[in-house]
Image (cartoon, rainbow, N blue to C red):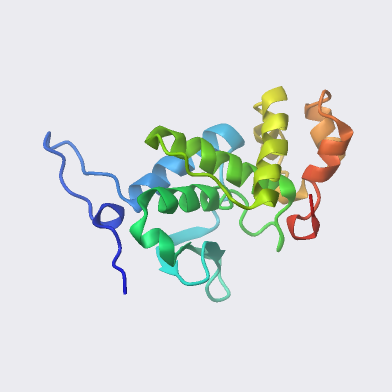
Length: 194
């Protein structure tokens, strides 16, 4: 059985004595700050319990009948720090409105994929998603954000959950967005085939 890369879970003191090296936990904190700045504050009624690896990850798991969340990364990410960060960045977006819907929309999956690709750029990695539906969702979402980078933050500031955003709401904050893209973005991801 492969072991987890030390850099993902072991925090070592920095030579300056001012803090520790990055781990998945500290990176998650950075990611949450980044996504809140871009897309609005997360629903803090949910408690993030931590990060673990499982054979059917990556996914968000809601243990028991409570407002608690565990982030589960795929087993292959144990040995690949960039893959682990890519998965963690993607799942961090789902922490914004975790209880809003049983199924994410194309917009939510697009935001998650867009953010994960954006986040790992700092590591000079050519890591990308091989799933064409996620890649297309990210491209459609990037088109929206290119027109109005504050669209999601503005809608969420009104109390609208990402998975509940309608095409008309998108068009109201982003009138230059083609209607066909707005309609695609609000489709449940599991029903959407590009």
